[in-house]
Length: 539
Image (cartoon, rainbow, N blue to C red; front, top):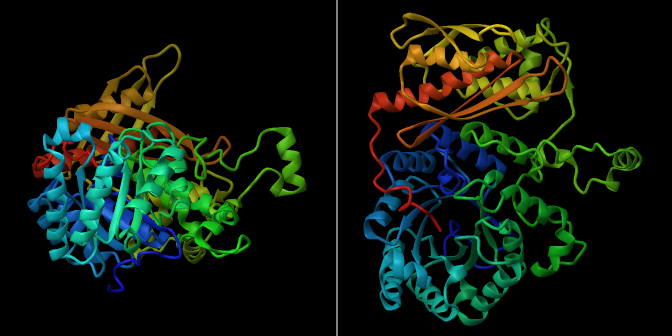
């Protein structure tokens, strides 16, 4: 066994992040290749053990994204997903080939309902395919993971046989998926215990779980699995993913961090041991959550555990009184442990570039000179409008400025007129792909609707606005507003995001951002998926 393959019984829980694969299957969460690369780099900074970078056979774009991540992202194992088919597996091996640490993750349905209605194969056929395809994967890479899809609803005795066959064929990791989020924690724990007791050779592989959240039990099931000997958890940032999503990385990691005294005995450690149970750099959690939310357009609900806006907010007088006396009265973790700070940067229009750069570096941003110049101009503009600029404001403008889609259309200016006795009217001026200034106006049901109609008249790309949301970055009447929108065209979804003290401007910029992604796709003549979304449903 080489150093690139995890040991069968690691001393900590391996975090297998599938945000870029399963997370991206969340309707509307599609990312382009540069965005996937940016997320992968942040996942490496976060300290995940394995990045499942995509499904290389699904499309040329997915193949290229996995290949680039394998080539450019160092640290984590880079993994690709493949159905138990020779073409899938070969394509996956080609995509992850540039990585110094690479893995093929192949899967095959094992539940009777999947065998009868989806695969239309017998148990004997599935058993033979599992062994053959794991063996083929192992001939291409040393690190192979196998998943019996819908394991939670598979007859246990047959599941044991399939897992044993996969181990004998060379699988180094066995992943047990609760594909439809059906099991309860006690049931899932018993399933894992049964596998460990009845599968020959199971002690020589890493046992993993992949839980879906259809009943809201994904995190609970994953943690119960850890108690029963699982040492790898597959999860996503913010819990995004197919249907109701996956186990949330931040909830898994912080549960193991905050309650490590409870989990320590299951690792053979003294109860009071303070060594972490994962290798995640928890201070990067919040930044990673924000990045994924901004790029996918999938907003984090305020009451979301760990990373929601209300996670560390206290309104009750009793709670506030307790916190003032001792934070431990109502907070079980420190906000700073996930990368949140209450710091305020008191800089104004006379502040210099070096101070600006220094604070960004403290916040974890390493900007090129060109990026710094653009962000500094945005900061100066903001400093003219606000008395103080907080770290939250800085994060918003930097994220907005640096994550710009290919600029086919650029917003030059926008002007609106509205009121309770007038027709909401917007005039918009854009710079088009050929550098020509384009101007049009429209009337709408409100100022944002009017802006969007005017933009549509100029761009003339058919689309359907399916989501529009505005969030305040900080409190106060001069707060920055963040706008996230999602468009749909030919069953594909495109997201846009922008931040500004003027929410009309932010709304226009977010819309242009999404339209630029759509326009670029149409211009390049995007190739159709080789797999339908239904076919690409994962473990």
